[in-house]
Length: 288
Image (cartoon, rainbow, N blue to C red; front, side):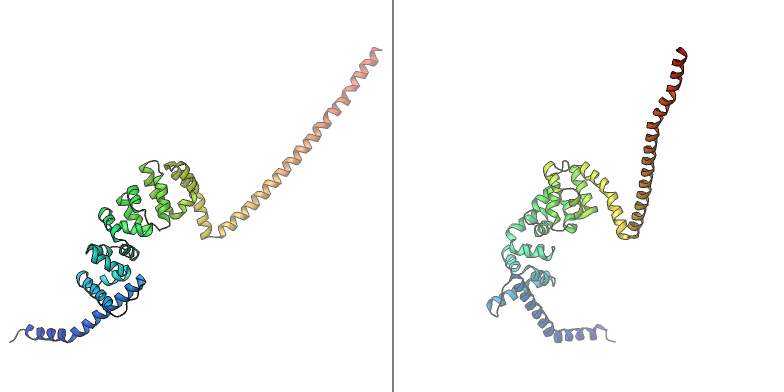
C-alpha cells in the first residue's frame, strides 16, 4: 500500500508549474501599477524605457524584501521614497512601513533630515512633522515621549501649534498635565474659553484651567441639555415671563401703597395744627 504523499506531492508540484506563469504575470501587473501610482504621486510621467524598467525592478526588489505591503508604502511615498531607499538603505522602507501615508510622503521628500530625527525620537517625530512642520522637536521637549504618542493619535493638525503655545507658557509641569487633561475633555473648545491673548501675555496657570472650567461647565451643560430637548427652553421662557409679570405687579402695588402713605402723612400735620389752635383761643379768652 502506497503512502498518501506519494500521490499528493506530484499533484502539488504540477499545479505549481502550471500556475507559476499566471502568478508571475500577476506580480508584474502589481509592480507596474505600483510604479504608475508612485509616479502620479510624485507628479512625474514614466514612459516605457530604461527609467521605467529600473523603477519596476526597484519595486519588485522591495516587495521581495519587505513583503506585499511594500507596494502601498511606495505608492504613498512616491518615486522619491524609492530614491531615498536606494541612497539611505533599508531604514527608509522600515520607517515608512510604520507611519501614515502623509508621513511616508514627507520621509521620501526629506530623508536626510527625518531619518536622524526618527533615530533620536522615534517614528512619532515624522507624524508630528507631517501635522506641524518644524515643531516635532519642541513638542517632544515640552511634553515628553509618553504624551507625544497620545498627541499623535488624537490631536488634529490645527490644534498642535496652539496646544504647544499654551504648554510652553505653563508655569509648572503639573499645569502642563492639567492642560492635556483639559484638552482631552474639551478639544478645540479649550482655546475658545481661555483667550490665547491672555495666555501669551501672562502665562498659563492651573488656577486658570481649573477655575475657567468650573465657571463654564454649568453653562455648557445647560446648553447641551437644551440642544437635546428644546422643550426645556420653551418651558424656561414661560416661567421667566410668569415670574417677570408677578414681580412687576408686586412692584406696582408697593409703589402705589408707598405713594398713598406719603399723602396721608402730609395731611395729618395740618389736621393736628387746626385742632390744636382751639384750646389756645379758649385760654386767651378766659385771661381777658
